[in-house]
Image 1 (cartoon, rainbow, N blue to C red):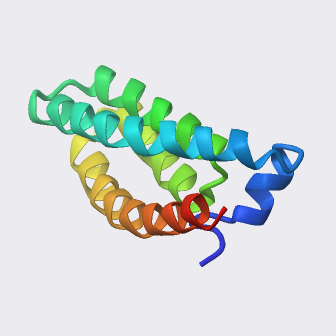
Image 2 (cartoon, rainbow, N blue to C red):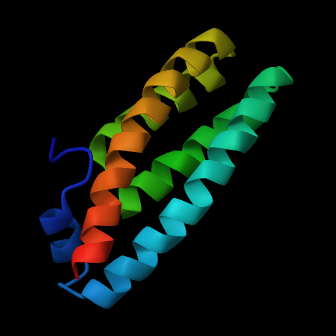
Length: 114
């Protein structure tokens, strides 16, 4: 699924600067799991405002690396958080983390094939 992580689109967005791409991937792979963990904490604490902020942050991070499916899921989490629907955020988070695992593998392949 190219829309999980399209390395060609990603590189094109960086004027084909592979070194920058690797740096961005490394930052994403380090930061994204932390944000997901913080989102889980916000959900466990019933904090819709913080969950919304974290979903928004994840949306931006996923956009930088051109992970379009993840952007869409994060946007749905953000909207659900704004509506105070934490059950819906949890539902979308489950889908997000599953897709994140697949995207992560593609990103690691990109990173290691350079």
